[in-house]
Length: 275
Ligand code: SF4
Image (cartoon, rainbow, N blue to C red; front, side, top):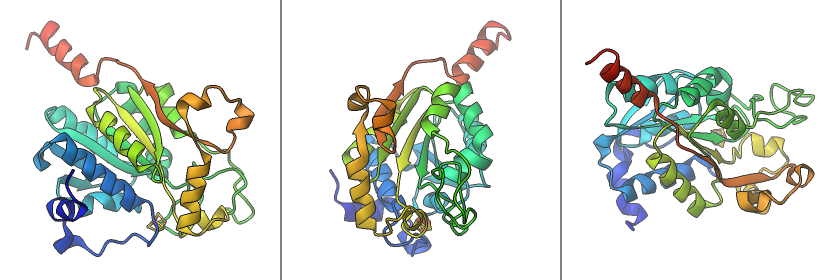
């Protein structure tokens, strides 16, 4: 395995784009390191990868890494990714989105990318809040939590990102936390290799907003909370709904094979249009 210093020089646009904007203790940097390690370990060349984001703190990630990258508009990472994958299926197309970006303004695109089973690897960094714009409630903010835009408590039940994409038809669905870095590395690897639409929800701390709103504002305490509350999916199967309340079920939640959109399209060209 290469040392971190080597990877920094090889993959980060450190002389052009740094310092980064992330707060000290933010979880996005841990995910970025895991992503780079996974891609490096799989032997892809930098030009094999297209990394696409929307808007938000996690949307800055492609700015910092030296792949083919796009930093697009809010909620639209998957639309750009779909176009690129269909135009050049040889490319490994990866999106990085935040919870607001993926599930709120981009929610419709997420559902339909999973339904079509376009071969895109998606990572949703879920920190349960809109961080970049000042700590507003997002679709994954827990019920009752006070945020900048819900000063008396969030009145909305929160979405389960993995359930949504499972129901929509994703080929692979998984969840990890940034505390469990070995698991995160394995899941990134599996998701990138998967044929079809894959999504990994990455539970990550926003120390500046959601940590404070949830009453744990130290990065170390948040990591401890992730450690204490994560349940491996096989162990979760034996637990009741009440026992799983507030827990983070981690691991591969869904792994199935469906024809990809591109395969269907090629079949159409061959059989009906005789191209
Ligand atoms: Fe990370 Fe939150 Fe800071 Fe954004 S505001 S960089 S999510 S800690």
